[in-house]
Image (cartoon, rainbow, N blue to C red):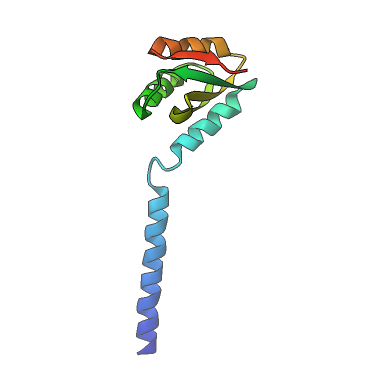
Length: 116
C-alpha cells in the first residue's frame, strides 16, 4: 500500500515539474529581453538621453512614441514615463543622435526637447 502511494505521489510530482517546464519554454517568453540584449551587443557607442515631451497624456500616446522610435536604427531601449512627461532612450550614438530622436518624437505629434 505504501509503495502504491509513493508511486502515485512520485507521478504527481513528476507531472507538476514537467508542466512547469513547458510553461517556461513556451514561445515568446523573454523574447523582448533577448532582442534588447542582442541590440546591446551590436551597439558601438552606447548613449542615453532624456527628453521632456509635451502633449503626452496617456499610455496610448506613449505607445505611439515607443513604436515610432523602435523603427529607428540604433535604438536600444525606450522607456516612456507618461506621468512625468518624459521619454528615456538608450541608443547607439554611432548611428543616431539625440536631435534625431527629438525630431522623431516631434514628428509623431508631441513637442520633444532633450533634457540637460
